[in-house]
Image 1 (cartoon, rainbow, N blue to C red):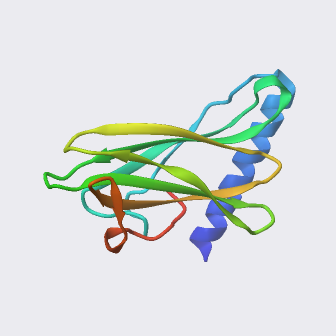
Image 2 (image 1 turned 90 degrees about the vertical axis):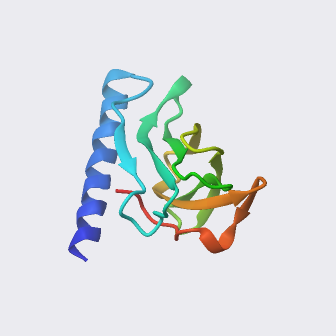
Length: 146
């Protein structure tokens, strides 16, 4: 419970500072905070997901933006996939998409955005793929990254 409250407090503080910074400086993007799926319920062997989160304001509209990387870390016939979903402030979960990498050491990335007025949090889930399809039995669980 304390860890959850800490995460909520950090997210609220970062969000308030980010929005204040955008309003005060008209900066299109603020310093990003790093995240990783490692050591969360999303984490599985053979896949590594990480990236950054920031508020981004092109042309006056503020977005929550996640830059996500996925690395295939296993020498096997399977690829790596990182799913991302938004938890909106109305309590609804919304799939954002995924990023896939295939071949030991391969790294791929993607950028996902949601209007900041709808943003509450995001979650990720690591999975393995075979022939381009998700092997659902190998997936971790959706978790908020650390």
